[in-house]
Length: 205
Image (tube, rainbow, N blue to C red; front, side, top):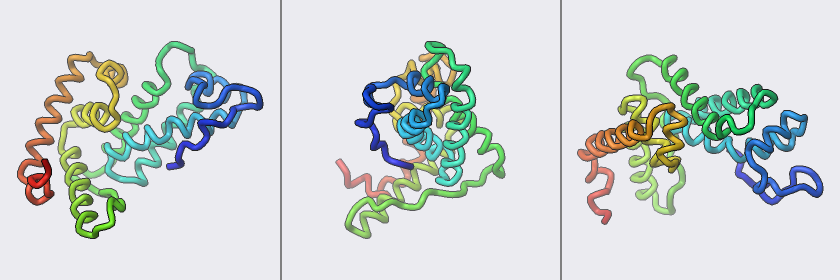
């Protein structure tokens, strides 16, 4: 995904920098024909969509497709968007999650394809291998969670959203979010417990 490098740029000459403009303002400007506003909003929201999709799906190519489709759907509703009806980011997270669910339902039940390739986490080959194993283990453990628990855990502990916003995204109560997150965390701990020594966690304080 493209890095956000345009936060100090102006959307138009003499107007506020992009980091000052709200999501709604940028979407309105796109609806009015400002393609630069679309690029700036994509730079701001696209990486968030991709992060959620990649964690939900465990597949980079599919996550990119979901991100593109989610942003496309945002552009389609731009002209009809009613200011104040909802946060754009909340709406987009919800669309992204729904697209991920649709994508998962297309797959053969029980298949875990497309574990992301390991990133370059450090200079040591041994460290990279171990870190890659941890990433793979987390993806596999997340994939084993019930769908709603996985969504709640990703939004809370990976995207670091607050429970009220997650409740709005998932259209459930804050109490239900807290319950899903707690159960998801317990399930993840149980799934990873037997691999602590293998993954090197027993040596980490």
